[in-house]
Structure formats: structure tokens, C-alpha cells
Length: 226
Image (cartoon, rainbow, N blue to C red):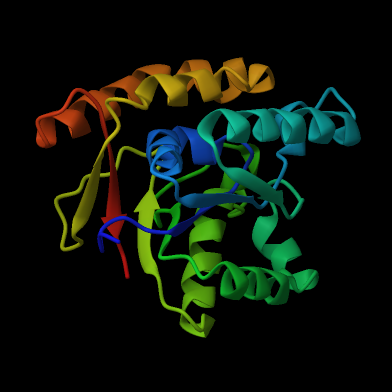
């Protein structure tokens, strides 16, 4: 096996659509190569539609993520932590032990997570409850406890990261899977106006910019943090 192609990849996703927005093209590429990709969704994002019952939007968003996962070719696992309060629920429900057991079982070669500067635009952010940064914190705290130390990479959803830093960068050619990523995003009708439409120009810009860096049509970039 080529050392740069993982046999198992885990993608941490604060909410149901984050793994597609941040790493959808890469997930599809790895899946096409026959690699096992697992997306772990921490929250179903029930506060995205405050006029609906939380149980209703949870069911809707859970089904959307499953459909998107099928499009990309990855498995989707939920922890169903409280939206805009992921870190508190993670600690109160002792999810760390479940997550640690799961990761030690999967033994991923790569974990892809939210970056430390990836802000989640929500009312909770004003109260210091930033779900995206919370998932980054969870990742950094659990990493030293893993029996098998995978490579650790980060992506951003809402924040346009400048990669002019000391971290090495992984650039992935998604020219053949960009359309699959876009198809997977269409599986989130509940998020069209909340996230997909507001982010579509940024997604396209990032994909073209990252593709140009490697002389390809489309790309996805990640910073390596471990």
C-alpha cells in the first residue's frame, strides 16, 4: 500500500453537513480508492430551525447526512449531542470513552477535524459555545489517548483559513469527485438557506484556489496539526 493513501479515515463533523462542506471531495476520492471512511457527527443541529420541534429537525438532518454519506461512499455515525453546547454534553455524557473505543477499533490512518479557527456562525458563538472549535478541542484532547497515532488534519467550514503558517499542508486533487461533493450537498435541503447557499461561492472559490496550487481543476486543502 502506498504510504500516502490511508486504509481508514475518520472525519469529525460538528454538525450533519460539515463533513461534506469541509472534506466531501476527499472523502469521495478515498472511497473510490477502496478506503474505509467514517464520518462522526457530534450534533444533529436541532437549533437550525427554532420554529420546528427539535425531534423533527433531528430526524430530518440525520436522514440527510445518511443520504449524503451514501453519495460520498462513507459511513455516518452520530453522537447526538446538544446543538451549540457540544463540549458540555460531551463531558457530561462521558462520550470520550465511547469515542476512544470507536477510534481504537477503527484505527484510522488519518483523522480530519475542524480547525481551531473554524468558527460556527450561530447565537451560541456569542456565548462562547462554538461547536466547531469545540470539536477541535475534543480532537486535541483525545489524540494523546489513542493507542494508534494517526496523522491529524484540519479543515474549515465558515472561516477562510490562511495557510501561511508553520503547519504543513495536504492538498488533495478532487477534480474527479468535486461533482460528487456537490451532489452530496444537494442531500441537505433543510440547510440550503442556512449554510449551503451562503457557502456555495466560498466552496467553489476554495476548490478552484486549491486546485490551482497543484495544477488541477479542483482541490481540497487541509493543515496537518499532528
